[in-house]
Image: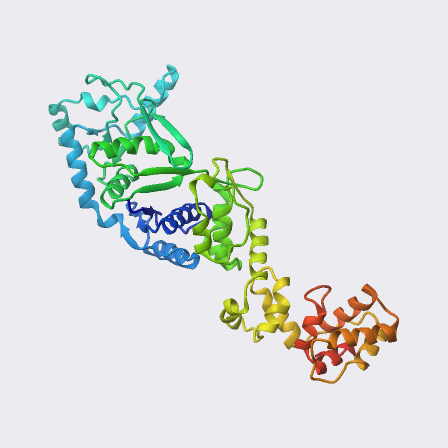
Amino acid sequence: MSVKVRFAPSPTGRLHVGNVRTALLNWLFARNSGGTFMLRMDDTDLQRSTAEFADGIRVDLNWLGLRWDEEKRQSDRTDRYAAAAEALKAQGRLYACYETEDELDRKRKRQRARGMPPIYDRAALKITPDEHATLAAEGRRPHWRFRLDNSENGSLTPLPTIVSWNDLIRGDQTVDVGSLSDPVVIRADGSFLYTFTSVIDDAEFGITHIIRGEDHVTNTGVQLQLFEALGAVPPAFGHHSLLVGADGAALSKRLGALSIESLREDGIEPMAVSSYTALIGTSDAIEAVADIDDLAARFAFSKISTAPARFDPEELKSLNARLLHATPYDDVAAHLADLGVGGDAAFWLAVRGNISVLADAAIWWRVVADRIDPVIEDRELTDIAAGLLPAEPWCDTTWDDWIAKVKAASGRKGRGLFHPLRMALTGRNDGPELKALLPLIGRARAEARLRGQQA
């Protein structure tokens, strides 16, 4: 069987780390299996869905390297949903209901007061054809519910009915649909809800596997009955755990600050985001993986834990730094040029171990190539060092030879030797090795700085 998965965001906002984790797991599984990855815009919420958000989702996925093989929009498929609805109405599986939200809320309150579960009582199934006609004549427009298969011999009272499946991640799962209300699948305004449209799309597009968050487990029990009612073979389901913060608290209220757009603006590299969100909550060690195909090669459902995955922004930043520390010059050359960094491979190798985000490289480029205000802590030492600078050209042994002479002439050693030289040459307390920076600074600029002059 050829694998086909889908990522189905609603274009009502930008992607954040929570839904990108779902996208990644689907993409990695498809890549690992040689399958197909579909992007499906679930844009039936016409009031909140926008073309700008849809474009933003595409930008974020492309930035992460998650290319899709095909794209569909639910807003283009209302005729298919209408056809499926008519078929289910003919079977008696969709039925019209006229209660307002206030009326339903009052019913639920009465049920709770009597110690009963607040599920829909299927009162609409008792409405006669004449009563339907009267309600329609009054201008009442119904919403439509899907009648769950959880009663016997035509009884209107739901009975315990277990829907089960073997989950790709969580193992054997069961949902008692007898404890659920018949779900509304068509609103009174004629718009279709996700529970309904998603099943029709998954069936008609040949989706073989659905990987999504554990908050959909109950929804899966309902949707499996919808697949059956439509005469469709359901896909395999896998439900991954949701993200929590480093403190174990839910991330839901903080996801705006963890949008992919904001992470990109903060200088986080796409492979740092992909590595981190793909590996947290798995048995694999969290490490910076440089190529997304390498991540795909590691994918296995058996590695995904059912425990909450802890997302720590500080750990992501640390991973981002480690990724950059190992990145070859050719992979960043164009980006460095965009930042106004004119250095070559020697510059990158000198500074990459001291940056957290790529933009930090521009700071060190200014240190070696622009004028700085040197800080003179030990005038005697820096004057001696300036006088002992060898003539250019410099080679690999220049630094060691020079430092040995400065040490002998000044009597300084350790921090008393190196810290005043660093402050004079760079104006900074710490940073890349001076041995690597000195050739980039050059003799004329180094001598001027050691003598306390702007250079």
